Length: 135
Image (tube, rainbow, N blue to C red):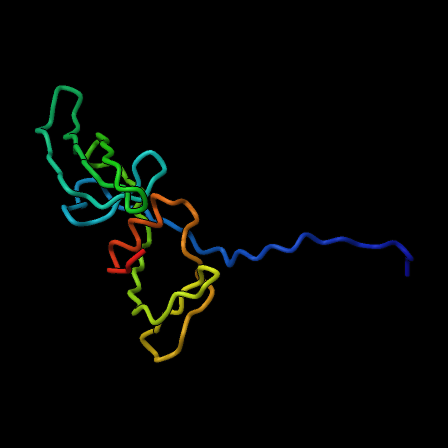
């Protein structure tokens, strides 16, 4: 046996992908698509007829699910697009602590207490307005 020290890089990724491929021609309005490396909800889809180069084209208009910006892309209908795995969870707000952490009620009846409100004043005002919280 050697007295050498061995170092192995730990990788916490289980190999699960954040996206999966789907044929562009099968993506519909209210679905999801990745446009310019951003996860978007599809708000408009139009498909052109087959042209002289042999492929119908799909024109996608999507809204970024994180920042609300509008993005567009044109993809041949027979090509694959990346579609994000989207999982939305709604919580009920229980309390906001003095240090800015929120207490949320989960579907199972437990609490989630590790989420902090944003420190950006404009974004914080939007959150407070959305939940009806008086500043």
